[in-house]
Image 1: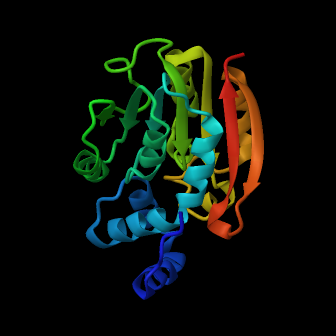
Image 2: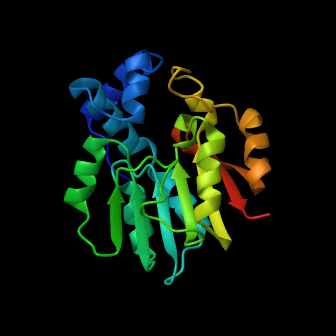
Image 3: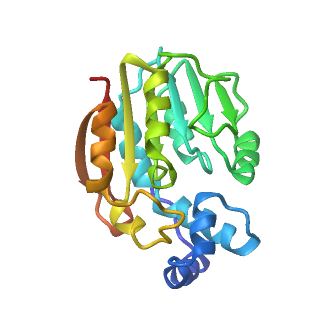
Amino acid sequence: TKMKRSLFDHSLSFVFRHIKDTEIMAQNMRSPKHFIFGYIAKRIMLFGNQKVIEDSVARLGISNDDVVIEIGSGNGQALLEIEKKKPSKIYAVEISEDFRKDLFSRFNSAKITITGNDAANLASIVSDKSIDKAILINVIYFLDPLDTYLEELKRVLKTSGVIIIAGKFGLAQGFDPKIFKNTDIQKIMPALEKHFAVTSTYVDLGDESSRYHAIKLTRK
């Protein structure tokens, strides 16, 4: 799906390139709050992620009876793709209040549960071994300490479950490291391998914003 960028969006991209290494921009990429920086973050995500979203959701192999969880649902782009696969249930986990407002206004389905829980503690809404498929797109950078989040993912995942982590690690290294904690794929691999069986694929979908690592986790 190709969205058309306006001249205004190209201008925002120009501005973004010049401020992306600032702490306030990193904070708004994680959780958009600021009127200007938050708006820029939302527009950049909208255009920069679509190809990665379509590709990574396809890699999950969602079927009709699956229960799916997305960690960091953001503006709902991936939820739309997940919905198309017609799973039986979707959990959308999003800590940003701004993004949650967007999600509640866009999605009105009994199949979708939108929650503001931190993904490190989903016990109040997701029971043990109840998730078939989990996806995290451009979210792993913020999960600190990473082990805590991986333990929780392991708790909720069914024995046959699959997790896809999509990360643009090259681009992420340009952001403020106080916010973007996990941007070196070599450094996070041992943590992933401690908890899961791991395969990683580098995917090039044709432009800088659409090159990413698709990391597949399954139970050992």
